[in-house]
Amino acid sequence: MDASLDLIPALRAVTSIHVFGAGLNAERTSHTAVPELRQRGWRVVPVHPRDGGACIDGVPIRSTVEEGTTVEVAVLFLAPERARDQVRRLLMTPHETPPLVWFQPGAEDDIALEWLREAGWESVHADCIVRYSERHNLSRTSIETPWYRQISDEDGSGCSVWTAHGCDEHAEPPTTAVEWVGDLLDLKTSTTSVPTYIRSLCREDESLEACALRLSR
Image 1 (cartoon, rainbow, N blue to C red):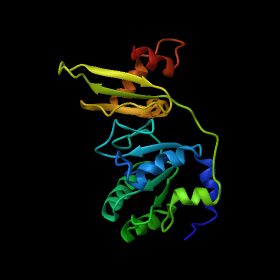
Image 2 (cartoon, rainbow, N blue to C red):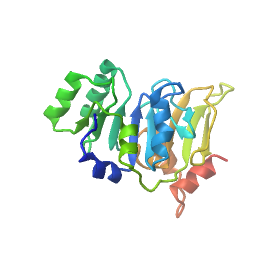
Image 3 (tube, rainbow, N blue to C red):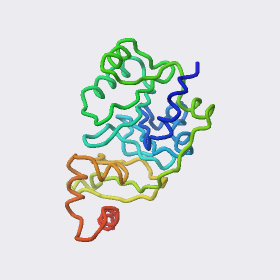
């Protein structure tokens, strides 16, 4: 089934696509969707509760969506009950503009779809966002942005290790607790403690990107 052609201008206009369920299992379509959508120019944000801090082709996996960050398109590669839980969380989160919620085939949940209809949110089901973008040759100018990670020190001292990574730079999965992971846009907008602290360390006339790089040395 081909989703509505009305989605074409909307998808061309968005910068970011959050892919819920995209983790390290390379055999899952949620994993392969990340580089496929990334190659078309979108900023792709994989979200997986267990694999946060690891990477898919140099794209950092977040364990959750943090307060202050914007979700423009939420793609659900989840079982129906988990998709319903994620829709509930999205509906309970304040948004300047409600995101487009895209249920990948197999993720559809009638209750979640009804919630979205009642809330006046746009949703898509019975189509694959990767195949849809291929059929309609959708692409946009890509955004190259570095990403960052803070993990606990391996020696158990209680210290934290902050690292900066180039766009699409791969990093091995962390062996200690992940305290924060995200790209420059997350660092600018997230209201959680680590990004807020990093922003507070910016020197006068220093960009946030330069500050984050300085702190990693």
